[in-house]
Image (cartoon, rainbow, N blue to C red):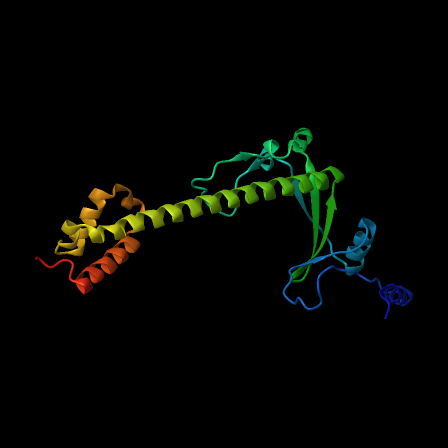
Length: 221
């Protein structure tokens, strides 16, 4: 049945159709987003007989102009705040809106669910679009920087482990009696090895020790 025809049939039967965005397959949604005008929302709430509506407000504050990383984290160690105006200068015109309400969210309780309706100011929608683009750019730049740093670190790790493996040609190194002594000797000759994870370093030393024994390199001549 055509949806518009369905609504017309319901109104003919003196029933008010209340259209919500949520999928009929989603049984666990607490909020049902109303589809229609504000007046239609009021009509729906009135017909249902809901005596009150909760009003939530989204106010633009100064922190919106800063990139603070994951807001759900209790701390952001090592993450500096980034001024989004440096990424998207167009955001500056919204500084005069600080303290103003940009969005209203109405919630009409219906048992265990709520009938929700959103009212967005035009300037708020424009701000959010620019804000999302700016934060996505920051996150993209940060991801690229982290990727470059990781690749550089991995390259340096490979270089250091390569230098470590060359110690198999060092007669004093191959003559050392324990792996602990080998680690100490390697650290003295290749100080940068302290950058390598301890588990990786021990595994490499074990491998070298096994090779030394297999080739008989540590035997006194």
